Image 1 (cartoon, rainbow, N blue to C red):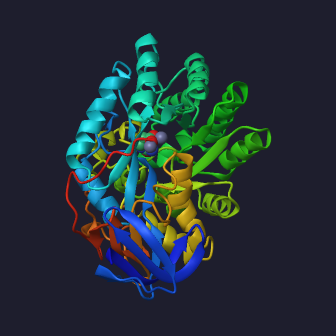
Image 2: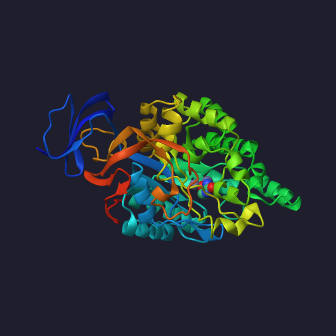
Image 3: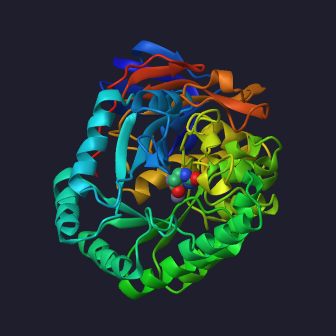
Length: 456
Ligand code: URP
Ligand code: ZN
Ligand code: ZN
């Protein structure tokens, strides 16, 4: 007799896809039975539904001091939203300022997450400062705290970007420590020059954000990062890739032997640059970096996911309120805090716009939104798999659900939805985190602070 049995669903396991039962005791999957005859104290009827491993978001910002303000979610609000949408583990970016010590930043972010997180969580640690103190602390955080990935920004000149000398040495350190280097790839200098040019021409609205950092600027950033990885042998992970030529640059590097992984994020897969051109400053809701692109880039991303060129789908959840925060940039698009939140919507967006349109299949959705993330970031098979011994993070998913994306359904603190009014197909019916039901049909039923830190 198990504590909980999930009965009769179509199970997506590493062994294959089949109808059966999952038996859970405590926090762990104890048995998976094709056909199904397991007995449990609690029974979750999954007949007619899909049963997926808990989804993992590889790219989330919650505590984010950025562009003169701070993102509006806290760990409780963001992870409630994540869980309701089927995401049971997040990897948050720790983004300290250039004067902050990495150890202090890690402690600050971890304390906030311990207090509030309802889902499990891990961290990528951004390297903005790289002096001797920082280098020593980075080593200690890897060996003592299970940090397994760093983050760098090639963009955001003068705020978060890291020079080439530091980039080279940091990559050498990553090789020595066995750490993956995740990177925001855009040429910071080119953006700075374009922003100044456009503003001088009186082009101040949100619609000028994309022209200030077109696809060649992103491709250049990817190429630059790949060249340094080729020189140093570092394993790199390119976050929020928005366009075909950026993917091409990464794939060319891969063919030369560079260990490069490419991430897409939900907004780039669904929204295009016309959203940022909306009148009356509404376009500001859709300002993120890299920017929303031309519609043709959607196909490049979906094709990349289908072929394996692109391995993961995250959100880059970075919520700034429209009314109070996005309006900081009414006089200049360069002052609009960058970000389009989607932590709650990610899986349903991928299902609606990727699976239901035939661009990818459900197995690819599971791989890119869960298993591949766990594999890339040293959590597999504890996370990212329905397998005996894995954490019982399970999503019973209703592929037949039909609805509309609405801000009023959101649990994030954000005051708008970038996906308002779009058709929605699919919903996480029941979500379990380490054996406990935490969300049911759009309602959060878990507990703030119940999330665990995943040391990797
Ligand atoms: O627009 C974005 N992406 N905001 C969050 C910060 C970052 O660059 O990831
Ligand atoms: Zn970024
Ligand atoms: Zn980001």
